[in-house]
Length: 310
Image (cartoon, rainbow, N blue to C red; front, top):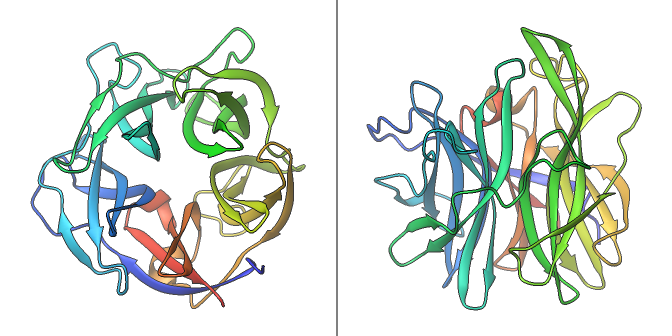
């Protein structure tokens, strides 16, 4: 099946509602279908750059907004916690008739931009609220992985839960301008809460690549397709040649991956995505593969939607 070619469908802007906790950004969209209703969860920021998790409900045909949140689904943790500066969603999965929202939590970094980890909350779709399963992180540094690990995306594959997460290798640059070099690593679990990690990589970085992030996985026939965005090490915020672009990879078992191609999106919107296309999440809606992703400035202006060419 050809996943190289996609058609741009629409741009979704931040809902025009006066909310002091949601002034800009719809970062890292996470779509999920619950009882035939299409929800998209995202990270949004207040005027002080504190991020919370919000959501919209979309029409599955037109992708127009049907309903919006009037309060954060989840916001920053207690002072001193791993997520006391904000939270951003990464994935949702059903385990034993409960729904769990995995997320990235961050705190102010000091010498580096931020210190990130992964958390988990139980999600109630009927009340549209989420409560942390525990205050501590489900994914963090270890003695084997001393740099930060975050953005847990969790899937059920071959009777196991597999987490694809962002693992930092090192930081480059000076005090006022530094960037992390990171890759997608793999953890496994029998219950979705207790994880085994041995540093397994999903893919290796190429010579000038500075990061792969995140990983959106679909099973198509007898293969798994993983979508992710990749950027160069430096000058990736404003330079289109170095900025995030979307790629896909293939796997037979969800562990061993082979990079395929960069995707092509026709009719890109020059106002919102002429520099970067980042943070893809793909699911099947009404028989078609639909991708939700962010454009310029990491989703500051909203969410982009495209469909795979049939």
